[in-house]
Length: 304
Image (tube, rainbow, N blue to C red):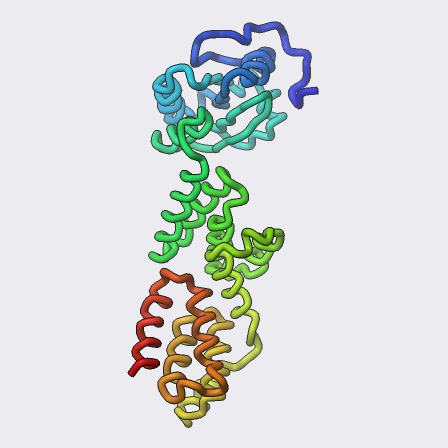
C-alpha cells in the first residue's frame, strides 16, 4: 500500500500539461501513479510565502524548458495540508521529486535557477549523477583550501544527496567536522565505510588526520616547546612536540619541527621523524599546501 493511502478521488493521471495545480484529493493520481510513467516534481507552496513566489516562476521555466521530460504539480498547503504533513514538510517552499511512486529527491527553500535545472536534469536522466557529485566534491575541496568551511560543507552535502556513498564527499564532510572541532562527528561519519571506500585517497587522508589528533592529546606543548628551545638538538623532545602539535590540529607547526629534526639527523631513530612527516602530508591531503611545500623542503634536505 502506498504511504499516501488509496482513498483519493478519481483524477486523470494522464494529464498532458507539464504544469498543473494539485490537491490532497488528487495526489495519488497526479503524483504517485503519474510518476510510474514519468518523473514528477511537487512544489509545496503558499500565497503568503515570499520565497515561494521567487521559486515558483523559476521552477516553472525549467520544467517548461524540459519539454515534457518531467511534470510539475503545484500544491497550496494552506488549502491542502494533508500530504505535506505526511511528508513532514516543516517549511516552504519544499520541492519533492517522485519516481516509480516514491519520493527520490528533494530540496527546501528558494534555489538559483542553475541549481533547479541541475535538479531537473538529474531527475530526467539528462545528466550523469556521479559526475555531478564528483564536480561538487572538487568545488568543495577548493572552498576548504580557501578556508570556506561553510561553503565546502554545503557542496559536500549536495554531493552526498546525489550519491550517499561518495567516498570523497564523506571524507570531505568529515574534514569539515574536524575543522569545527567535532572529532566524534567525523568518526561517526566514517564508521561504516566499506573496504573499497577505505582505500580512497581522501578517506585515507582524513583517517590519518583522526589518528594524529588522538596520538598525544594530554601532552603539554608549552613545556615541550621550552625544552626544544633550550636544546635545539634534543630530537626526542622535538619529535614529542611535533606529535603534540599534530594532536592539537597544528599540522604546520608539527611539520616545521619534523623538518628541522630531519635537517639535523636524516636517519634519527630509524627515520621516525620522516615517517611522521609523511603521515602529516597524507592527513593534510596530497594536493594541500602543507604537503606540496613540505615535500619540496623534505627533498631539499634529503638530497642536499
